[in-house]
Structure formats: structure tokens, C-alpha cells
Amino acid sequence: MIISQLRIVFMTVLVGVLIGCGGGGSDTGDTGSNGSAGNQTPDDNGGGTTDPPIITDLNVLTAAELAGYSSFLDDFDQVRVAATEGGPTDFATQPAAGNVTYAGYMQLIIGNATVSANVVGDATLQVNLATETVFGAADGFIGVARDEFGTNRAANYGGVVTIANGVVIDNTTGADTLGFGIDGTLDNGLNRFDVSGNLVGTLYGANAEGLYAIGSNTGVHGDMDVTIDGLDTPNDIAIATVSTLKD
Image 1 (cartoon, rainbow, N blue to C red):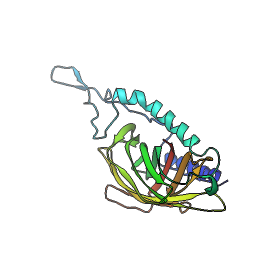
Image 2 (cartoon, rainbow, N blue to C red; image 1 turned 180 degrees about the vertical axis):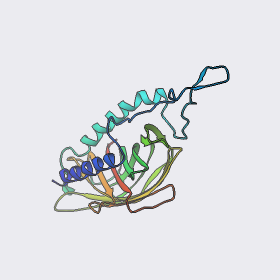
Image 3 (cartoon, helix red, strand yellow; image 1 turned 90 degrees about the vertical axis):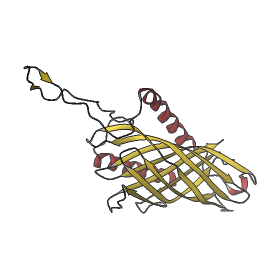
Image 4 (spheres, rainbow, N blue to C red; image 1 turned 120 degrees about the vertical axis):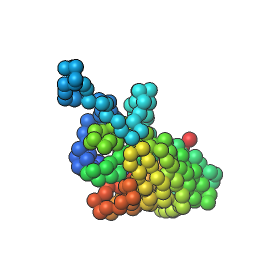
């Protein structure tokens, strides 16, 4: 029931973000055009000239990167679903000790009506069920961005989001819960996003095969904050999720 409610909230906010940011279409976005015919103006020889191509600072995906982007998103979707299969892990049946590695993805939906980013990056977490600690990192973010001309483009985001100060809370009469902090800066060449906050989640499967956590600035789960190009405005949206599987 909790996960169903989380997904409803997540999808509701996502739709609102996409509508507010002029979104829609495919996850890869519109990669845009590098130029347009422009208006023909006569020159001294009576001919015509074409407006120069659009030049953007955005780290737009190369043709090769764009070709693999669809597969990247497909794998993200598969891991996102699998991470919560089997129901919450009961404390009585979870592995008792050892450092467990979880690999998967972090998704960030951040921005406002002017600047926005819907990105996914590779995430790796170390969960020590003996000391009940969680730490890790996410990088290699790729996603949809709006260039300075208002066109949606698929772009690379440089930067690392660290995962630290995590704990696993033993609920001896029920499911295990966990929480951890995130902090980092992403830069797509045009805009800089400083993100921080706390995510809350659960281990899933009979042997804690999956891990899912979420944080947002909607006041529903965890907390999140984003500063865009040095500005922190009250209308910014910030949602982070982590979906991983035992490696």
C-alpha cells in the first residue's frame, strides 16, 4: 500500500513537472535541430544567406550516446520494478551480517517552469546489515534538459551525488526501513543543480534482494532541496528516488 501511494504521488508530481516545463513526448526528449532555414536575405550578389546554426552550451548526447539511451532507460525501468518485488523484507528473515552491495539507479526530477531536468544515473550502495549503515554514490547522469532556446534535448550531466549517513532501522515485528542523505552537484554545461536531502525507503524480498528509497520537497516522504544556478526559489520541484538490486 505504501509503495502504491508513493508511485501515485511520484507520477502525479512528474506529470505536473512535465506540464509545467512544457514536457511531454518521449523520455529522450526532442534532441532538437542544429539549425534552421531562417529568413533569406539578399546579399550584394542578389543571392540568399541562411541563418547560422543554433549553438548551445548544453552537453547534448552524441549520436552514439543517443542510440544507447533507450536501452539505458529500459534497464532503469526494469530495475525500478524489480527493486520492490517480493514485498518488504521482514527483519527476522533478512541476512544477519555482511556488507551487501546494491546496484541500480538514482532518478532526479528537479527544476521549475524555466529550468528543469529529469535525469537518471548509475547508483551503487553498500549496506552493512551488521552495523546497519548505508553509503554509496551515483554518477553518469543522463536525461532531458531544456536548452537556452526552450528546446528539450537529451544531455549528459557531469557530477557525483554522494550517499552517506545511512542507517537501517530494525523493526523486529515487521519490515526493515532505512534512510540516508544525498548531496551533490550536477552540471549539464548550461545549468548547475545543487541537490541535497534525505531519502527514506525499505528493503524488499525474502533476503533483501531489492532496495527502494524516495525523498521530495512535497512534504510526503523524506526531504529534498535544489538550488539552480545559485538560486533557491520556492517554486522549485525536487524529487529523488533510488532503485537498486543486490549485486
